[in-house]
Length: 265
Image (tube, rainbow, N blue to C red; front, top):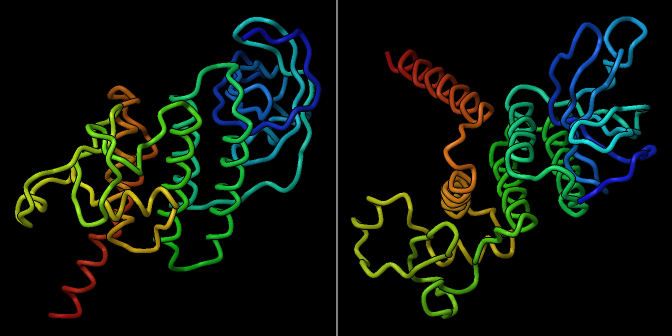
């Protein structure tokens, strides 16, 4: 898709930045009207630069010019309040950014996905006010992953099986094949189901279709589902934010275990 030479003050979010020469940075930004773009922001470092504004999770209006893969930022200004995230919520925000960086194509507009991304960031910012927001956080992430896959043309099949196009049964179990969809699983034994994390119940698939994820069992199954499908399309690329989130969770689990052992001793 060809983009004209100049664009003035379009809504964007910075997904990532890296240093470029002495006073400049290279930005990956997500624009509502123009998709993901690579921009050079010249002279933004230093006291008189505007580098402090070019942070992730900050709604911006940005102008740029150029016709190549790497364009030049010509202006930027704030557009609403910056969204403050900390600890696990901050890593979750970077996780969203990594998904957009690795799965979207340059200059491929997704206005609905931009709106979903902005809404998800706002939900994460609201969770800062809650001490126990684990389930709510997971629901936010799963819904965004589902909508991301849909926007990119990889929509999850959540209403019929991939082999016979029969409606899903809430009582049945399925093996979800990335790129194809759910296939009915024939072994009804609880032992067989428990031995495979790749299985998901029809009830969970139907609930995910309607984004009803309040049930913890459904939420856990949908997490396994989206991870497997996203890994398929990521082609083996590891997400740094996911690794950091796992390390943080292990640290929390170890701390809880140590506290319990202390209390029991």
